[in-house]
Image (cartoon, rainbow, N blue to C red; front, side, top):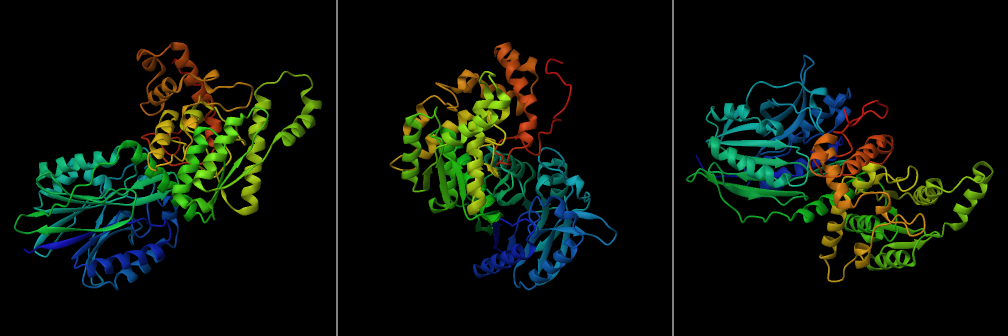
Length: 541
């Protein structure tokens, strides 16, 4: 046995672009070879990207995969372990990993444990594998696992009983708050328990509503972390194995990101990848002088650059001068393209046109929604004319209870804060202001009471509980899936809990029509929370 070097390729595949992904893999393998790496490990389904959803069912996928294998076979003098969709002659389809050296496929591993919960639906596409793959290279015994497999103790135990020394784990594990450290802590314990070295290589990048944080690492068989790759960035990093110590050499530890830094970086990366890979030249948003649009603007600028961001302030009768000043000042500080579009004439025109129908009916939310829809129409007009993506600015608290307007402030193609509760919005804004000597978000945007400014002296708390109470109830109902009775038992007022749950349940129709947004929680309004719009369920059952 001798010392060897492993390259961990934490990269961001372009879903479905097999040619580009394969070319990137070839380049990284050649770079690793120049650094005297003996083998390189890529993420799960690295040739196609994850999740490819029904692209997996396309009839010409196998032909494109074969072309990828031909390209990869040109790489010499380094062993590669990579993920691909394995379609067999008898019609079976697997989520698989190939081991290739000098153009020869030395082995194929088919994923055993197919996740079919939360955001995962792999049983729709794949069949389960049942055989382990163990191979010897450089006098060292390796095993291969794919993502969910490493969380099945029985599967890992079976591999350890085959006298494997190091397990190569290919992953496409989506992000949620706190998950990077949870993976490391759990798998360090597993490595020690089963006396295995673990090389965990994860995909990085935003894909539709999913975020992949990367955060790849190496665990030694004594349960110590040998190496960790920073989150939310592509990287090619090397782990060196010491044959005498029978462990990987330890590099300097990377401090765990503080929670709000972690969330902020996740949102920036998700926004950047969605905008750029969708082919938009830039983004546009309504900048109201409130905290949600202020934070969205900061994220957009950090994601794609100020020169590609346009903000529009659209004041009406109830818009305070403070809001106009704060929006103007933030736009100036961040260097974005900015303009003010007065909406009085448009709203008044709507009202005149509708007067024969409305008559003397008292004013209500209808008139408020006309303001929001006027703004939405202007943003979509500017988007259509110049091609920029409209960013929605609503947060999870508002979207949960329907405190938003269809075809108004909900317009847009990407909802940056869709999975971020209002209380977290405040913390993220404060965090962003710590990153520069001059805060980019004016202080009073953070400290003033939130208001939609759609009627005189309006405050959010006129219609909603205080946000700390609202968010706690929402978290219990959405993420923890507690019943109404269980939430009341926590000590929250019965009438408040009943109101919040009633609002959440009856606004499913709004959420279905809203833009997608990056998932940062264990249960977002996306793939994993599916309720019928029309139903007769009552919360007190």
